[in-house]
Image (cartoon, rainbow, N blue to C red; front, side, top):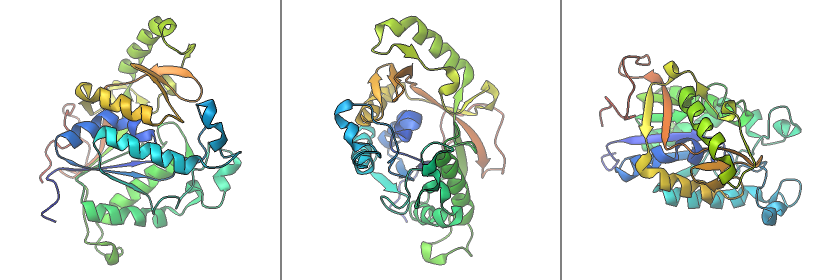
Length: 299
């Protein structure tokens, strides 16, 4: 394993575009610094709504061809961020987008939401043992905003982190590896509120006619919950370009963007995290906000 980069970051996301919205600046920063950045996406995002009218035929109720198209968008987004290691959990199409909570798609054969978490986690364990990340980023236990695939991605990521270090679990998947630090995606409420105030004043100058609400942003929490922030100002152009690459899902008018509901929200250059597992002591630190996710991590 001597050919691995000294610093290695693994991100686990539910659908193509989640990574660019939540962590685009973080990914671009660490890739530019020479860290190993591995992204695992759990579904192809087949149930997403399509923004451009010219591509409406891709939708699941028409050609049902959105998943492969979004995989191409994701590849383009990764080029913008400088990330060269991207995988789909279990291979492309192994798990299907489950749709929003409470819809019939939740129970569709192959839906990620209905997958056995240990079975799905085994696919991720193989990745962990191969790339040996010191740091893992995923969602909180509500998936940021309650989407079933986001909740399942959280479950699978946390279970895989546990199983990857167990020498008795599937030796055929590689040598055990303990992830040192685990972070959940967060958004500082005071920062979000200030950004939405600016958006309200600027809305008339944007292509959008209305704004989203602060609580529409996944993972908004009280300031005290945030334990790390990554200043991505130098990489916000890369983040914006990556988000634009997801053209079926996102319309970008920097420093704002909108999803299929056409409601504007801020495009954040600084990205926020909660440290929930720390191998340096077993509990999240509360003695100051980190500005480097690899703080205190040995190669």
